[in-house]
Length: 402
Image (cartoon, rainbow, N blue to C red; front, top):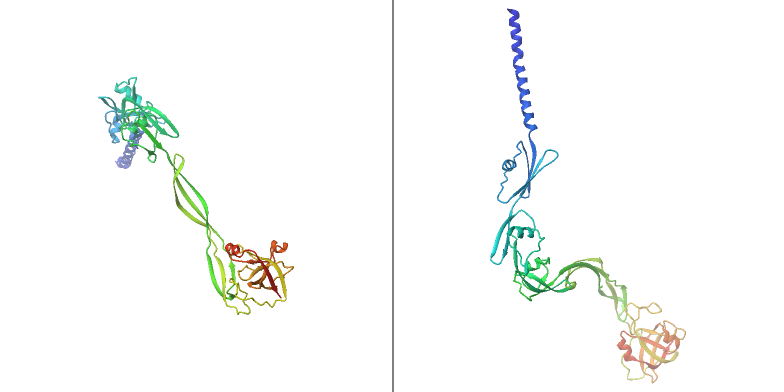
């Protein structure tokens, strides 16, 4: 009895776990069997892709499972891949119409060309008929294919002038029927939604754009400063001015290659300009030290104390701003006189009289020139402007100096 009880207890102890192991094995086998018969399905419809696992091979049950509804005219393409997966491509049907006169046919198509629609409509084109689209044009939703009588128009575009037969309809559709495209920016001489008529002239200007950059000078400013350290007759350039540079970005509008508008869209400074600084003297000289420009003829003869005198012609000259004399001085009206330094040394103070003894100028020998060295003139007087030089002209003079 004891032994039997022990054996039974031992058996009961291991009976339940054994059952659990068997049940687990059965469940695992069932799951494996279900997975073995499932396949991956990718459904492409309405510009999206839906992926799912299914054990059915029925196309419509799969579409129903993923929530894709099929309507009249829709087309489903099925593709079984080598890896066992399945692809379903749903092509939605859209409406197009074909008309000729009082005949009007609506069609549902999932693609194809205008020729396909014409063949499906049963409407035939006569010898003198023309379609508003070329036969190889791809069908699009809502396309209205019209067969009508031909009209002759004159088309001026892209450098050509030609007469073309187009179908009756809008200008836009007539141009499409001959494969002629226009962009929203092109200039058309008529409303593109107006009806074409025989002899109509349509002119199209092609609008294009181009961008480029160019460099422009930035003028420098001239700043005048006063200084009591210089005589009031003196003017010196303290700092030379320098032009700056600016890069300008330009956009041009062209019609048939000709510029009709130009606008600056942006700019940047390449090089900043440098101001020119001029120092003007404010110091007044005493009468004894002042070498002044005598512009009017004295009423009486002027006595000269110079021990030397040279006779000959007196002329006048001018120079550009920033120029220097042969002695390095800045030419100044009322001071600078050009001479032949072999006859009149540089730095000599000069008194210039007419041959009848009237004083007309005073100055300092600071410069020279070809006319002075050749002897055609004994002095050449600096003046601020060409007009002053012309008024002075040429005079016979006596030049006095120490």
